Image (cartoon, rainbow, N blue to C red):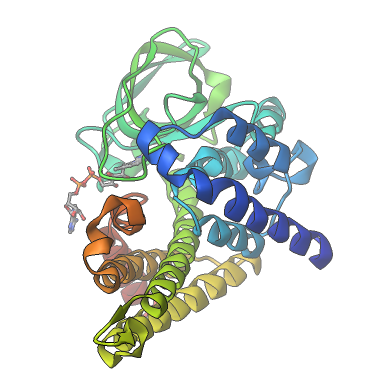
Length: 380
Ligand SMILES: Cc1cc2nc3c(=O)[nH]c(=O)nc-3n(C[C@H](O)[C@H](O)[C@H](O)COP(=O)(O)OP(=O)(O)OC[C@H]3O[C@@H](n4cnc5c(N)ncnc54)[C@H](O)[C@@H]3O)c2cc1C
């Protein structure tokens, strides 16, 4: 159920101030230290950000998709590592449980996920299974009341902070129908987490390996029936892709604002850069593409809230918005000239940060395959 418009507007106003006044001044520090300060995480908990998408009966805000993307958009106006702090609790880490969990599983975990007392992660990718997620080799072997879980996951966002993983593991034969989903507490024996990887961008958001060595996962922690895990993962990703599209639009809007401010201030040949039509063309292209991505993203969110399937639309929104923000970031570097390449101006950092959006939650090529498959299936 949607919040009443006044409450929602107040929430957006609070978030806008939080982003502008608390987060943006910390961008450089977070990039240098590769860590979001604990006091910021605490403030995020107090604002209810960890529970944006968790139903109200479990202590979350229960936002609609249309509302959630508006929040994601606001968080696009600062370094995307801040959103990652609560991003997995709102999206890929919790939504398998929200969609397919039993009443007992929800009651056990969702209140603590919503409050941010615990962090959740989503563990699909493996060294041998990336774009081909249905080929996971991590095994869950039934042994009485438990499944013995063995295998390795990699590039798992927030793994070093997570208390709970949604893990996709093989319980049956080859292919998607042999995959099941499990809620795996991080403190089970046999679960170990690797060191955070060094990355191109988004410092402050960590990814690690997660290893399982015969970890005894209670059978009661299976999400849905055996063999439903891959389907659950794909439904989770449909939603996640739309959320990522919103973040991309927010960052594009930030980059355009920064580029326009710089182009208006900086003078060459006796004029502001913004007076040159070749610079104006870059601003116009960035603005137009951002508006198009925003419209596609909002329309897809409305479809989801109307109960329609969004597999095609979410893939298209993520594909277009992530490619778009890459082009916008590239033009922003160009408008800043040499300063665009220098760390102090912050533009090169955002340029590196946005590169990830074309890769995770399905690469651009995988989105193209989904869009084509769905379009052909629908007869155009
Ligand atoms: C910072 C970061 C955070 C991440 N967080 C998570 C997380 O929380 N949980 C999780 O499970 N995973 C996570 N991932 C993993 C991410 O989803 C994968 O990296 C991504 O899906 C691509 O898989 P891969 O890296 O194995 O690349 P590959 O699948 O090896 O792909 C390499 C290249 O081949 C292309 N390719 C592959 N198959 C095809 C095809 N059929 N047709 C055309 N081109 C193809 C790809 O598009 C890509 O360009 C994260 C990754 C990063 C970098």
